[in-house]
Image: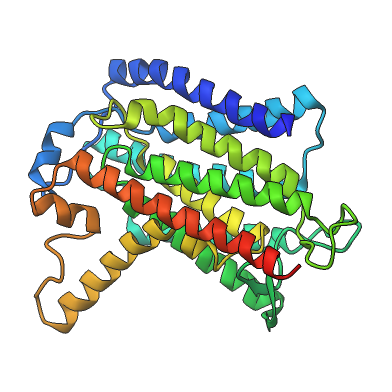
Length: 355
């Protein structure tokens, strides 16, 4: 437990104080955000706000994760390093996108097809590696079954379909986080709650792991749950620390560097904990916002030009209705918190009922 608390505390403090210095560094170099002209006009006042703050989140989480292991002499796990690698690689794609926007002074970075291709390649590599290198019990980081609260025995996919499923999960959640990152602090606060929930889930899986023995018939067959709890809390701490500066009025944005990385972390956690479908509840806010975009596009095409919402993603619809930004963010945080409570409650209830 000490290593888990160390990871969260160290990453929080590093993000809290490190972001302040990173803001000054970005301001001196004029690395500011460019705003879309077709978005809410109230966002134009944010033009020039420092971006690429996701760098601080990623570095803080890495340092917190590594420092916790060194301070407590905990062993690094293949699973933890694999998920961390996914976060870093997707963060690099986002960084490239952000950097192009800054250098070329426009609101568009990487071409959409190029970005999706890079995400797909990273996801394929993760999927393949996650199905290799079994531990002494034969468990690999990812499973070849679809999972909800644990593996669904009737939903076996096999290695090829499993990799395709993993690619879809990573692409979906990384883009969902990207779409959610539209208002000051919205994605950061929501992601922090999701990571905190998964720290709790991983701690419970560790305490009730089949590898521990004596956990009973409802034990969890998962790989390295303790190490994943360390990583989940490191991510939560980094987000909470960054939120101090990212909350309205934001002094810095996470950019695609942060949103793609955090989306990848959400996907990775759902895969290695065998809770891919449960994540649709825990991170329900991200799902709703993504569905609003899908519905907007579908409705626009089906009705030949009519709009279901004033603007998508959903948070911008409420902005155009006249809601204040801070009101939208706080209410969306409340919704996210409710989803998190329901998701963790279902996870625990399944174990209790099975005893």
